Length: 315
Ligand code: URA
Image (spheres, rainbow, N blue to C red):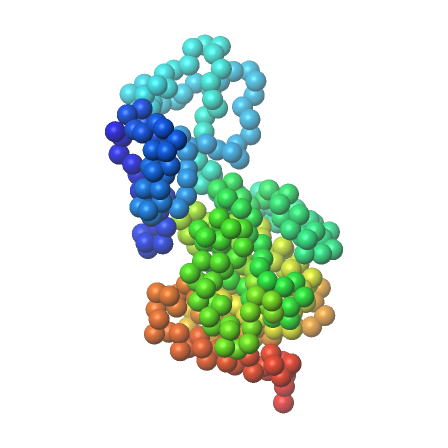
């Protein structure tokens, strides 16, 4: 049996397993299910195909297959040099191995995102636009679009970083362990999913929960900005370094920025929105001693929100 590949991102946050059921492996539906359950128990949270497939690549012209440039010895068994004239699958690379979009394609993606986001007149239209948007490569590896959870009429908007495995499966932000901790922190300040609107910097899961790239953030940002316009919150809570640094255009570390109100501003907003940067619940799960810092931020947030005040201008 060929060894199964089980690997993670080095931080133990995810595992990706690539294997196929080999001919000497179970072949009844039942045993295949047991095999799948074993993989999930082993920590696999993503299915990838045995042979990488670049879904982003343009289809090869009909004139015939490109020769496999690899010497016979390194071609996978069973992938012999195609006979002249025979049709063969296009040369493929995994979506996440696809070349990073260059500046020109990033600019085009951002322009298209801006246009599509501006056209949306409601959160539902914006969601439809995101479903149709092809300018973020993460869409190719994600299972579901993960745009928002909570109430589009809420006055509190919470912005995290990017969906994880559970969010990717369910198509809703903050439904995994970090989301459950977030719920437990919101409850004592009188907030829940009916009274907040929750979204992320990115709307598709980065493979292996890696950090977002600048191109991914740039392509998603117009959709996030449009959400802020449409929801029109009175107060923002920003979770974690990526969200804080991007939205407040700051470079300092999150431990320096957290707990300090700042104004979030973007073109098209009638007024700046007071934003509270705080620690990401996923970080708090790893560093529980830091919860007391986040708790202070939540209390300060609740006080300003309940008073309906902008703490940066209140006298
Ligand atoms: N972490 C985030 O930043 N967002 C989610 O939706 C889940 C985990």
